[in-house]
Image (cartoon, rainbow over all chains, first blue to last red):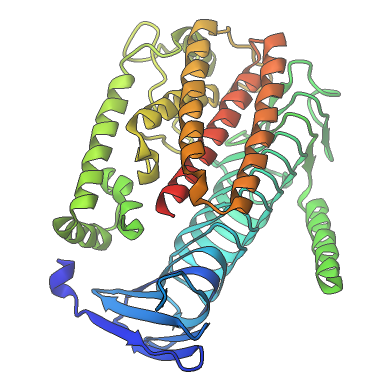
Length: 303
Length: 226
């Protein structure tokens, strides 16, 4: 039982001019749970079996860290009872599983290899690395995931979602934003939005299932040459266009058309109510993503 | 509620947890009455959900779909067959599974399942080279839309009660996004009225309504935790 296995350690760490620093040794396979009402949670990986916590907070704030069983919990508190705003910078063993949560919290993770769960209401989530079960949810912030593998579920409500160089089972969703997936290696992908474009550049594996859906935006999907896929394309008010010959002309009157390429082993659905469906070769979409990235970086620098 | 464990209860019920996590979760269950209670709720919902499979859901629609999917084969279980919860052999399997936040109200979860049933049925892959036209299952569809509308109304009512717990900016963003989904639902409904047999439009409406349910469920869960 956890309680008997647990050597409970409670560190109530006194603040020093609004800054708290501590390092805690953790057993192999330990996980980290961080709860921060407002501020930031930044996590990096390193090769040591210790967790280093650096926190900047108000003078009345305090940081609590407790190791119970194999879970290290870190949370922010306040002597006045009201939630405090804390910026955490935490360094963890690379394979440590992470559960990160907050309300007005930006979350950033880099250089880890374990499972990651991150959830915030108002704030961006940017993750590089991770494997196993990875779930990233924000309501008002954009969500990005790069260089990860596993069973992945990423969603926002009011911003964009972007995945790059990711493999495994993928589900990406937003309501008011774009979904961009590139460099994907997967046999199971689902990407949907209500108001925004969907772009997929990645493998189409024999036997795989791929679903791309938007209500108001365009859906652009890369279909590699030689892919064995049964494509089902549908649009109510848009057009269907491809960079290679299709077995029909124009847009089918019944809104949906299904056809095979190669053996048709994989199944791919690309659908948009108001927007267009584009079936492209991978290089075309790679160029588009790169242009988009450049544009985004330029805007970022200007701001 | 301990999210670290509660989010894994569904996988636990489905025997999909790795041995180590399973042992750790069982140890936690021994000491946490709240998680035991939640697990019991989940079991009840799964049992109830399974019992729903034995009804003839949207049979008129499904038989047409099934016949097109598997020519020469008769669906198992009844003369008309039933969609059950699985796709074809090449696709990933579907299972009855809920996460804990869906258990905010078991009744809502069951309505979600009904809507999901239609979603799964309509998502069945189609034969190549054919513009697909299912027979309209108007009565059954209407019942599903109605139940989903009721579930949405319940969750909206809950949100109206709980939204004071949320930041005003969050409430505004949620309302804007709900309005966005509402417009999408209205557009899909208008298109469907003009072409009720259209499989894509049926699916799109079901999917968009599911999106609204899930957003409401998620926001209510966040409000409940605040």
